[in-house]
Image 1 (cartoon, rainbow, N blue to C red):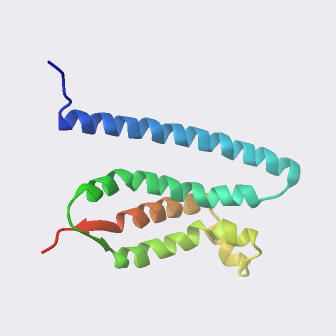
Image 2 (cartoon, rainbow, N blue to C red):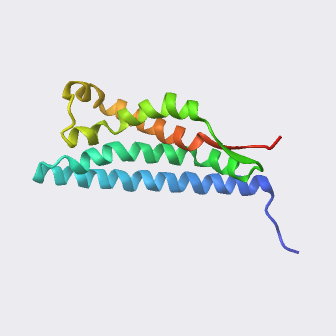
Image 3 (tube, helix red, strand yellow):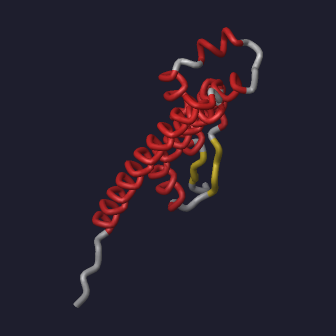
Length: 143
């Protein structure tokens, strides 16, 4: 007689694997960030650091939203986009999150860019954008 996993056990194991993979990703990303900073110290080229500073939080936001996305994916219905959330929260967050890349490209408006370059603001905006980007897509049951 074989033992089969119950749905709650499958969910538990799935979340546990997700948390372990997420933690591994964060550790490896931190190692890569340190490598980029060491590279900057010898080359004085901000490109890699600013690119990482912009993209890493967005990826974290996407990863944080994945469990909710998979729940929506499993539902029956048609895909809908929450344009209000994307435009009201996602767009401003994206602008703040990519400010380091824009500054690196000699973007005009250095004063505004320097205000938006606060590392905590860029990080939170990137996470918000990634999360809103994924959670704005969900399924609604057909009526």
